[in-house]
Amino acid sequence: MVDLGIAHHFGGGVYAKETHVPTGHVLVQHMHEHAHLSILAAGTVEVLVDGVRSVVVGPACLTIEAGKHHGIRALTGSVWYCIHATDCTDPEQVDKVLIAPDSGMPAMMAIAAELAS
Image (cartoon, rainbow, N blue to C red; front, side, top):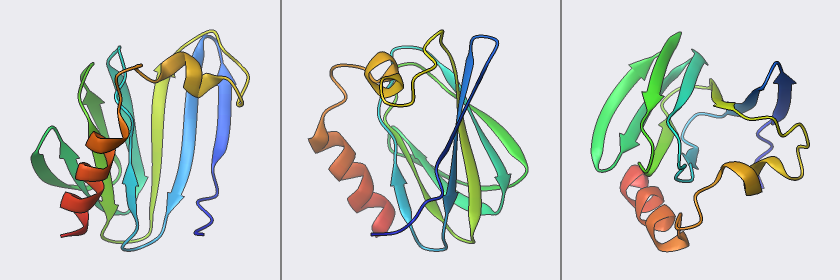
């Protein structure tokens, strides 16, 4: 298993999930009921949002609209943040609060397969 160096940051009603993504690794995100920001602090990634691919070079900030399945493939070692508005401050519970209930595994597996190709 790859160590993604995940760190959780909370403050002022904002949650930031920090992930260190090694070159070639695919990171598939869930679908969320609310729009959120994703920040590429360092590196270069291929982003896939609802079937649309783009290459992003950090530093960069993207808005992921509500209800969009999304994922990245690191083209270089990268640092990726997902930023959400939430009052939850428990790393063990925050995913349950933020992930859309219909964010199914088949869609996530399809994104992973497409990014890997």
